[in-house]
Figure 1 (spheres, protein in one colour):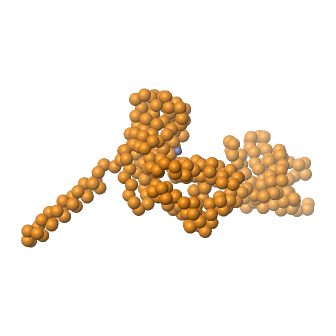
Figure 2 (figure 1 turned 45 degrees about the vertical axis):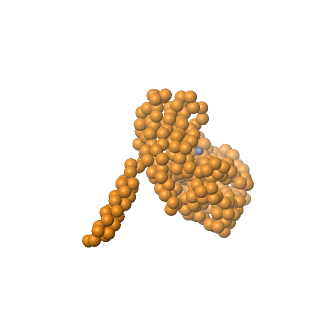
Figure 3 (figure 1 turned 180 degrees about the horizontal axis):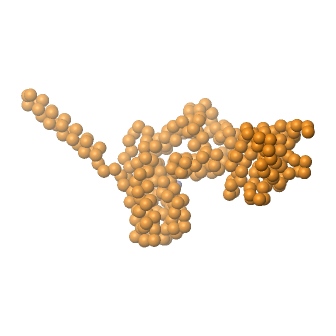
Length: 308
Ligand SMILES: [Zn+2]
């Protein structure tokens, strides 16, 4: 080996060493500070483990070619803070009162705020997308909330309601018309290069049309047919009886009886007082009331009653 080659080898070796040291650098950490609200210390200890599992993952879920080095984050839980939480640069402030009152929801808030740290968008970014992306990662990814449960106001430009509304819209885009769009939007927002035309480029449809298509995809069924007598299910039926009550039948046998509580052109509401159970028959579904929402129980089709 001549001298030139030897010195090249040494320099090359040093460069490699420097690279491997850099890539082995400690990953960014999230640290909670609860000195001003010691009653939240045990919540924060568990939340800190969760935050350190999710922070790098959130970075990876939004990564798009150009590497972004995540900063260390400090989350202060303070008794004086009045809002829910806020992120500013790599500092997050959370309300101690809210953490104590809603510990589970507050873990979701941590995820939402960590997304803001990862985003690091320049000022003046599209607010509905900033908050929509944060709630998309919080609700759809971290909390596994089903798409059907996201709020969906039936109005023009409803996505501008931001937060969970925009998050559901992004979820729908990701799962069908524009997979990977969240990562793409994030990259554009980060470099200050967001244009609404990205939606048309990706799907051939503009933003307003996509929003309308999203609403249409979840529109509950239309009006009931006029012969609302028997709803056939896969293994049974709901049938209106001669006394005006409703029976649920399985294999030809009546298994439950319901009182008709209300009727509109779109649905019939049934009540089983004994079980405290409310059902809603629509043009093609039987829904069950749980808490303050209706969930699909069966799918079915209306048929005229057979003559006796
Ligand atoms: Zn936010």
